Length: 169
Image: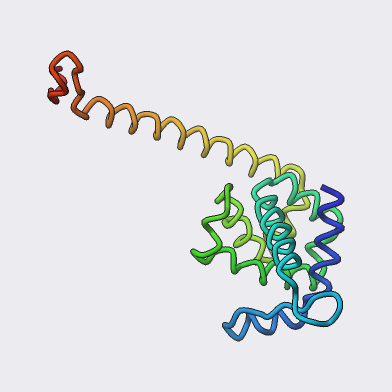
């Protein structure tokens, strides 16, 4: 995580003013590479991968606590970077996310009160526990729905030459 955090810090310091201004005006920012020109395809791909990984790390309350304890949430540049990352909520980007909970935490990080509370290990533990309970509830509910759907679907009997028969209760 330390390597990712250092790398991300160097990236977002390079892009701060240009991208934040473009984002606030409602248009997608044009990225400028390290050499002053527009980014190459490889640089864009790398930036996409790094930002995707960072946004998904935000789904981990312990990582949020790590960032808060090191003072990142007090840095105006970092807060602007978090605002910039809101583009991940757009449908063309959200399809790449594996942990959708990260978008919820990205929204919460827009509020100063949440950023202040993320420093507390007790608060982080509570959030982590609630997240696990949500996943358990979701998993149980999904299993019940799938079982109900499987019981209600007609079954094909290979001995009846593929004729569909309803399952008799």
